[in-house]
Image (cartoon, rainbow, N blue to C red; front, top):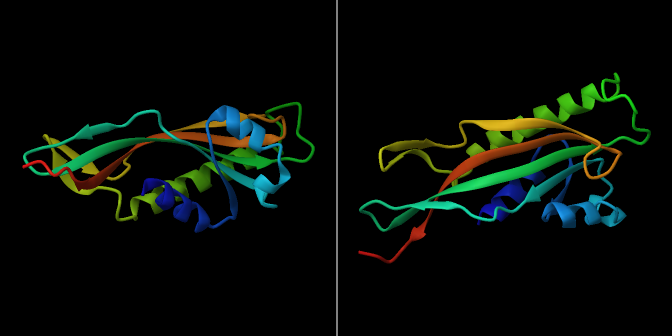
Length: 161
């Protein structure tokens, strides 16, 4: 369910992005295949989590904290050797803005838990995230940002009484 939600949010961003769902090793290989970028200059790389954290209370619902990691990368045709170049900073800024747009849009989705208290902790969507600048990431032509955050979601009933 979360994968389809992420894909839907990416499809509706203000700038078209190719979507790659893979671990870093696979993503690096996929970036060399022209059809993977779908002719788009921005690539959204979603790295699936290895684990997530589940909580329950006295209800049959499972409250999950889903660790989300993704990259928004733009290909520069003639990358600069100097990372402080005037052509690199605008790309980093553009990808940072797009990452923030993604987070805000994801928070609007029904699957994201908002306004719920679980075991004394209030869950109110994605309320903090970490953005890192990426220079020549996976490919010396790719520049952008990496993002990590925790997404609180509520899953189906456990069946426990």
